[in-house]
Image (cartoon, rainbow, N blue to C red):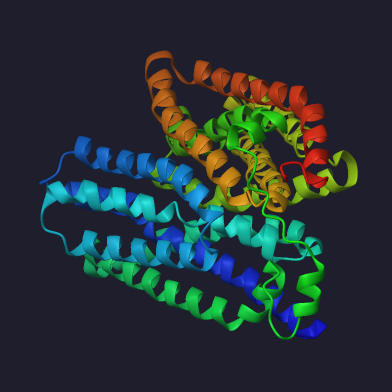
Length: 427
């Protein structure tokens, strides 16, 4: 393969990952978009509908642990393709199903299939892309969040208005099934490039492959990697990040509606706008890490500090003006996306050398999701019983704790990263 063909394969590989993860959002956020119409039919209680969402989160979080480990053993081609196709079938069954009792189990299965996507994609970016392309790919993949969110809510809204909620699930499921076929076909089209990256001996480059020793890097257990590399600090940091990134995001529209007495439609629009604005955090965090810190935990700590400052200003001044409040919330959530990128994308990249990128990603992502699920309920309880002022102070405390954990662990992670680069884990 020439340089031009390699460059073309690299672009195609990233676009396939970007497309696959963006498409996944239409099959996971559509339930939220359809809940009001489903509830309006009167056959299902809000409590039961809420349990369906909880079931999705629980299976998604548990699946991250299992599928993260499997993601280092099974080719991403099959993991991602199966996840997309399975999620597509789950959505189609959700739309066709007429037994209310089965909805919970169908959506739990959907959560499990969706958990098969992110960890293998991180493995692809860390092992199948050249090192020079990894940083740019790592931050660009974060654009799947706003794109997928907007696509999901827009498509759901259009289909709901003309065909009802069942059609939403059937159409979204069909699109996911088609996406899985595109993924399989796209990966197959660049199999020669992937074979080179994996060191598989082919007639074209057998001499190069034989000259490079194969590194399996499977000798270290997960607990040993987590403790021995200083990753334990990232584990605690991702818990605090999950609370602020997802838990707070969930309650922002309610906070704006209740605190400033505006129309719910205005507050709901923030659910789409804020993820777009938050992209700045991912790009600036990458720039800051490259130019100044060269340590993912240090960068994460700085961005936790920025988030804490924004929340403190929200408590002191933001309550006086809705525009200022929205800006400060956007700064805080943007900072959290930067932290999320450092912890869930760039730290796992280092473990690609040990063949553990998917396992580490799955474990950290599971921690993040469990924290998000718990905080979603906790924030609601605090807001209802203690009011929004104390709720905002609780967000500030979380941001400060995240900052403290990151700064406490930055030296441990710097040493651990050096061990990984030196082949720590091989026998």
